[in-house]
Amino acid sequence: MTVTSPAPAAIAALHTGLYIDGRWGPAASGATFAVTNPATGALLTHVADGGIDDARRALDSASRQQARWAATPPRTRSEILYRAYDLIVERADEIAAVMTAEMGKPLAEARGEVAYGAEFFRWFAEEAVRIGGDHTTTGDGANRIVVSKQPVGPCILITPWNFPLAMGTRKIGPAIAAGCTMVFKPAELTPLTALLLAAILAEAGLPDGVLNMVTTSDPAAVVGEWMSSGAARKVSFTGSTEVGKTLLRQAAGTVMRTSMELGGNAPFIVCADADLDRAVDGLMVAKMRNMGQACTAANRIFVHRNVIDEFTGKLAEQMKALVVGDGSVAGTQVGPLVEAAAVDKVTTLVDDALGRGARVMTGGVRPDGPGHFYPPTVLTDVHPDSELMRTEIFGPVAALTPFGSTESDGIDEVLTLANDTPWGLVGYAYTQDVDRADRLSDALQVGMVGINTGLVSNPAAPFGGVKESGLGREGGRLGIEEFLDVKYVARPIRGAAG
Ligand code: NAD
Image (cartoon, rainbow, N blue to C red; front, top):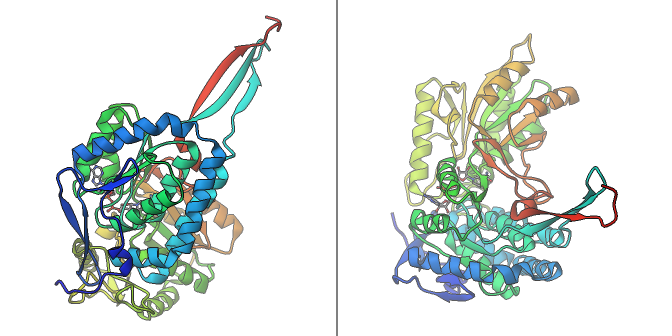
């Protein structure tokens, strides 16, 4: 159902064209596509719908600027990032309002993402002036080995809709710091936050052509053009494993560097000795951040049999108390899902679990429109063969499965269950026993582990997964390395023996 609601003033003031070579303009075809508000169905605005000609122009611009940008002093690149950080912080309310309007998360969460997203610029402003190398001699003492780092070259950046600001800054920050130029394609469901970000970077003094942005309703065409051109030297992608695999195959064509931040299927393990209140609070974050639409979302919740009844009761109470509604309304804690198809998917997954014997403790009934809402839901006795154990739920549904017994801590059993997935992004475990925590941390097949916490994301930490959750790391000390090539220079030492 479509209802009208006034778009925030910030949206009316946005540039809605393509941003290429420092200029805003329409798509070559003149086409546009609509952006709507998932809480109401209201049309927010139209943005330029870029095609292959626009993609080519954007990558030409990035290629032309690469050598000059690489030669820019690191301090200059750092200062641009600091200015962009300051501008994002100054304009936090405006950015949050745009984000909430286009993707639905409550304003308080949107402000949280703005703060988190801005931090990547500050972090990489600090990293830009700390790019190091190495200097040693060969074993026989006859040669110097001088190792330096150089920007990889023009990069393709592709981001999903669920964190429209932070997924952009997590890539653009290190690319700027390293001296790479970019072509950037934000998700078609949430282009507005990205448009605002590009405008902020221009205001911060980023030279023309360093960042080129193409919004499009045909990502395969635009990105396919970039991937096959031979001019781009790196692709950094955040999104589904399925699209990531397509890009990996395409990257093989030009042997391009790749960073892949893909899907997850996080286990959340509550041991018998856990502090249950702390575990419930942690699960509320790990499950409900972004209405469950996060790659880090707790997807499979394994609770020791001795404590599952008490844990489920406490969890259901907190889930039931959440205020669901339009994220732009004060007090809303749970917004809509991003689109109707997302609600269809969650409904099908819940029905499948119920058909296999799960029980609903709260929620589980899809409301009527308008908006793409699904209620906070707790399911218990979820059978391990249920479809929602094998796929990202991407919705506000907590699926609980018991493990262990009165005689056993069940750690071997739960590790087998937790690792029985092709994904390996993050795992969470609650226990007060340090040896058990070490055992779980060591054996979980994931890139990140949260022990007694439901939140692992931090600009200072290396974010990323193993198995089909991806390749490479974003943030932390490793984040900039993804945008740097290593060069080794051999120089004989005059007069050395040998
Ligand atoms: P998606 O893969 O459908 O889309 C991601 C991006 O890829 C979008 O910009 C989209 O336009 C683009 N795209 C789609 N088809 C393409 C194609 N054929 N060629 C090139 N680009 C294409 O994912 P989504 O639905 O936007 O995001 C949700 C997914 O992202 C989930 O699987 C989630 O786990 C994952 N995610 C991962 C991380 C992480 O850091 N690991 C973070 C956030 C989201």
